[in-house]
Image 1 (cartoon, rainbow, N blue to C red):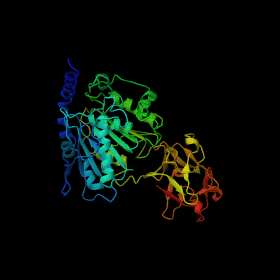
Image 2 (tube, rainbow, N blue to C red):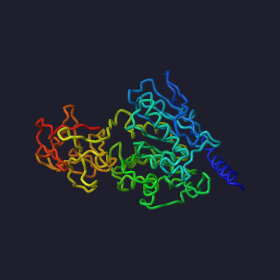
Image 3 (cartoon, one colour):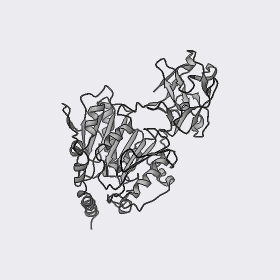
Image 4 (cartoon, rainbow, N blue to C red):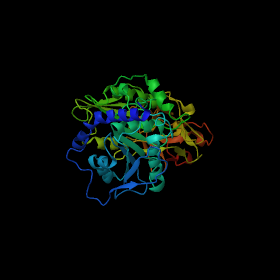
Length: 448
């Protein structure tokens, strides 16, 4: 059998497996809600969007109320689906109308309509194939639609969920977070024989240590030292296409990549039959959030789940997240964790701004200032003037909550004291602590 014929046979087997499942998406994804609303906005195809080794098609939905610098959500369809059907039968466009973000819909544009998540090219940064084409769509949207490069997210179902894992692994420089509905870990579906199907992965027979899974992601973009995107994972316990065991392997992978414990810091049931766990933080924008859906098969997302993903991204108005450096006005230097330490109790200081992860802070909807993708929090070690401001595991305490004020000060919720560069120093390594607010330039900060 020729290589081409073998590839076609494997691809057709994949389609045959999923073709009986994909119609359920149209029936269950919306359950009475329509993605199209009374709006002049419509789905539009974009051609000539840049490098396109996967020969994909690009569709985009720009809501009427899009702000000057809108966020971007890439929504990736399942096998046998298309960009227009994913637009029509999911809630992302309706949510875009509500919250003003752009939705980019890639279209696989091949027989079977599956995305490549298996080839060596797909699993390498700018290596080629479908993920490189989707990266081109993101870059085009940022450059030509005035989108906010700091607020780009990706989500998808089944093949689209696998693609979400691949994009977060190979393009951490482009995406801030992802939401994968019934997928597998990055690299799990890898093949070297030209096929696009990995039965061992699909049936949950591939297990690795967290370090091994994490290394697959890190090796996809050698030399990358920037922030890693957060991940939200969804899976039905009765999934018979991409088995439920993959859910646990994804949790292993992304907690390792983001440097947080696999022991949940928060567990609840936001809806009957759902078990939600958060890792590294109890906040709505935790580094990793995982939702197990009891008794459900390969039919995610269903109604209301897209809104949960948008909330995880911080795009629903409740998140209010801002990510970037915290700059000291007096010195022009950045709030910095010495030596990129992750040790609880490490006192923060200021250092020349360099864009590294130990200087990348996120202001969350719960008033925290988190670093390392939400893995650690800025923590006041006391309530008196002179108290150190340190790194610590996020715990939701008021000593980890901060007001970012319009006058440029940052004050502790618990103490009311100001974030202060000790002695008004402008030198690298000047320590940061709490002090009574006095209007000095060493107490003036700018986030972002």
